[in-house]
Length: 164
Image 1 (cartoon, rainbow, N blue to C red):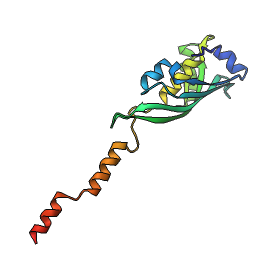
Image 2 (cartoon, one colour):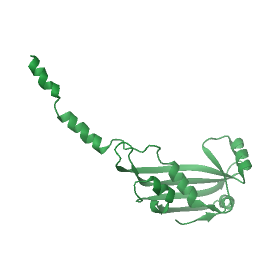
Image 3 (cartoon, one colour):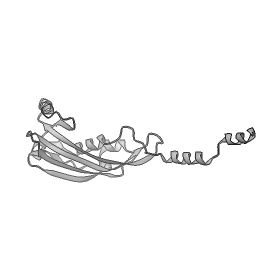
Image 4 (cartoon, rainbow, N blue to C red):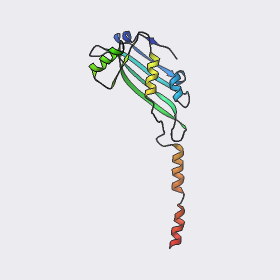
């Protein structure tokens, strides 16, 4: 995996932009959650400064990964499309202070570093976009079973004719 190392604070101060496409196979933690290593994640990181003057990064990930359905245990394609806003604190105390000031649950405040691995953030966002219990909307085997049930006459239908 390309190890883009950034200075998180400089990246945001200079309104930097990085984007790319990374194969799932190169994302060790993500590939462990997938049925196979096919697919790729398209990502984009945009640095800026918040209205309050804090360094922030808009991080977006999208792509399709193969997950195992928890109902029928067969693989299926799951689309990931997620975006988050990260704000960076200099240390844990500063991050806590930022959280109190902004008071916004939709913004994640993390400790930034001068040698931050951007791909770790990308992989984290892709992992957070996965469902806890992945499953098909309609399992393929379940659809066949329902079709068979609807076509097969009920065994009690024959008994109904004996009753008359």
